[in-house]
Image 1 (cartoon, rainbow, N blue to C red):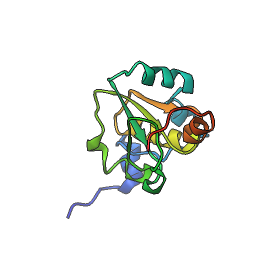
Image 2 (cartoon, rainbow, N blue to C red):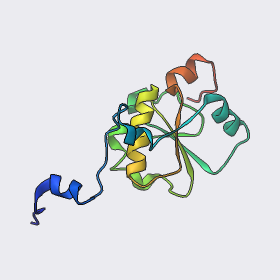
Image 3 (cartoon, helix red, strand yellow):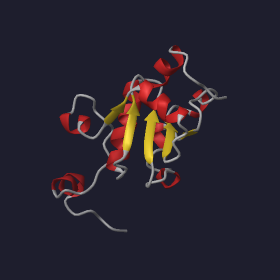
Image 4 (tube, one colour):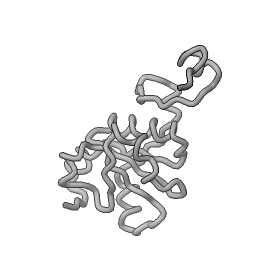
Length: 135
């Protein structure tokens, strides 16, 4: 057994890496995220851009319809399943809402995935606008 001297607060104060939950009112968290407009993302899909990985962070029970090519890694499993995410690709992440995607984008940034984009409007807006879906 090892003990972290000074506790978690000491770890953070000494610039130890932590994973943030993604507070949308935090300026620091906002600086970690790049939003991708739906039309730009649809264009990437239409051009069959191969150097992207699409991650759907909705719960497994919601993954019966999804954006074509998406891989389901629920938000609460991102850290534990990070080995399934290719670090050399641009990542597009989305949740049901833009907030859920934002939270995932912050976590991925904190896990050292710096080429990560959050889909503006999330899956709800994608579906509402009648954009392509897979089942």
